[in-house]
Image 1 (tube, rainbow over the protein chains, first blue to last red):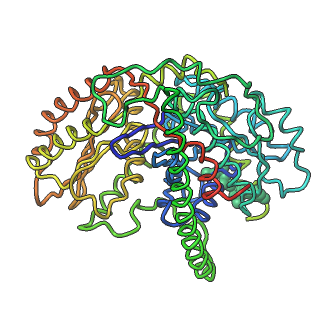
Image 2 (image 1 turned 30 degrees about the vertical axis):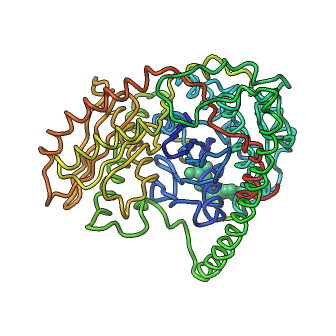
Image 3 (image 1 turned 180 degrees about the vertical axis):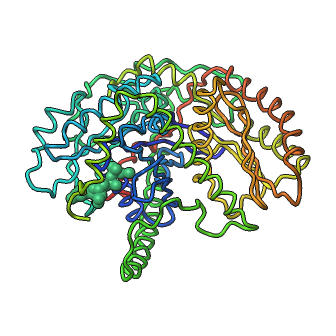
Length: 360
Length: 174
Ligand SMILES: Nc1nc2c(ncn2[C@@H]2O[C@H](COP(=O)(O)OP(=O)(O)O)[C@@H](O)[C@H]2O)c(=O)[nH]1
Ligand SMILES: [Mg+2]
């Protein structure tokens, strides 16, 4: 659930990459981490097994910048896709504000895609979230492989709620940003509908969204549907809310115009700054590329800089504990589901036994 | 994506804790007082979903967002363990390191108090002793926040219209 902190003028949203094992969720996050400007992203932390399989989750914070006056941050998570990790998957999904479902486009992965999607629906419902209304984007990944299903086929089979869809080749980075961008937009617009300017006419001050590939949003006026603002006792100063009076409207418009221009200049400056950072990043990447670098962030202590006074050790301990517990919970769960054990075993064998797609 | 907030959305809206300057000011004061008494190094409040709420003390060298995500996950995982053992949850957890230790205590039903302390400065017993009092104090503040009526205050200003520009800046014009 989005956390709103007026003290820091900050909102925090939790976005979760969901999907079957090996569909490319971790790869998506790696790409976001690689491409995002350094000052806007935190460490990519993975709680994974030796063989790169996500045990609990991958996590990275991403700062979008100022939206509507609020510093907007996303916490990006991936879930472990393997069927038997449902207990840990549920934990990661807790309080999710949006979901990217990463599907593998290969025909023989359809069953796993569907099973995982159904599992997502169940887990959402279990925590009182409606799979129909939670912001969601579907990604058809691995478009580079031969004989993949067409987007139309995938859509017909998987997209029961008419969510926006994107084709992707996560290993090359194709489609990764557009997917995340769309989800970010939907999440923020939903938040604005719930909490946006209430007297701003139909649309509630929401951004003129570019048409998604497919979206079944009915064109109803959302602002009217939200309850009228109530006056609370304890509220900080800037809370006096504008029920616009016609006489004041003109002056307000003028001022709004000037403020907008100022913001535009501000954004221009920020953009230039970001471009400089990106260039620095690219340079750093070029240097790094010289060395071969497989997934090197398994169980990374959160702070890259050594925490002072051996703080890193404590954190490492914490990580280990989580890993052990996560494993135990997963195992306990699997143990309970005796009849399905064979299924899990088959599943594992399938993946471990040379099921790795090309392009590694 | 229904335009009208669904029932679950409305329910969530009610559950949501919104923090204002005053709240954070009071919380920080309680945390600082506790930190002095317990001789801990730093204290953070973390949402059970992994978002940092506030922190006091020396957090230098600690990546707050990452630690918040990990602490919340750790807490969530042990909660499942507690359930298996027939408990509803463990109200506190301690991870002891050689020098640095961390103690997690649940506050209300949505927030985790995270105390980092140095074994040279204090002991687990000391920290736990003062934690009890703090948790009571924080519970009272949180109950107040929770019972306060939803202000209906918009979180975004008019600038929200520029949202797609901000997204373009981050993700490219696609
Ligand atoms: N050919 C191909 N392989 C991919 C693509 N995306 C991911 N992979 C590979 O699929 C495997 C599983 O990816 P990973 O991100 O770990 O999957 P996860 O289990 O969903 O986190 C890895 O070997 C990736 O390199 C893609 O677009 N095309
Ligand atoms: Mg993974």
